[in-house]
Image (cartoon, rainbow over all chains, first blue to last red):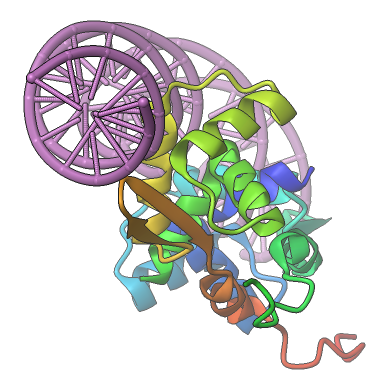
Length: 97
Length: 97
DNA sequence: TTGATAGGCAAGTGGCGACTTGCCTATGGT
DNA sequence: ACCATAGGCAAGTCGCCACTTGCCTATCAA
């Protein structure tokens, strides 16, 4: 549900992963690990990133497709768009005397 | 920073508080407590809600103004808008063969 | 078949965050 | 002056979450 989206976005490492995927779709687990280490200096274990990806997937922020021994990950921003319209003001005019 | 926004939005109770404030601005701590209990069945202590408001305030999602012994809370959705444009796709065309 | 690569499962640990409890301050009414 | 209301501060508990470690499965190449 939409609740999972907020939980998924709560972690800074997961947000970094989304950053990587928005830049290039279809990355594998190892690719993401390497990029997090190289570009952000994050020395995470492979399992850590794998678990993060699982959280992102269960929130439908990441979709994965398996091909042979590779598993490619794609970003899906649609849940974010939906979740954030929640507090959109009707108009926020200066009509609150 | 924008990091605080995600942390603030991570908790379901805090999101409920924003729900209340988007419906009516300028509520006091006690009002929010009462509404959370009435409309959502949340039996939270006053301190719990106060701490949640502190988190929301430090994320600039809530602004407060003091008047006499009352402290009114106003919603500020602008940080949400800014934080969520982070993963907006350039165009997301169907050009990924 | 062997080895290397890509990934998964499960249990354990440490720290942070949500919530409570008790007490204290300040403003307003009567 | 008194008391009730509105809110703040600080310490303590508890559960969840991020991360690690060790071992296991599957695919491809030689």
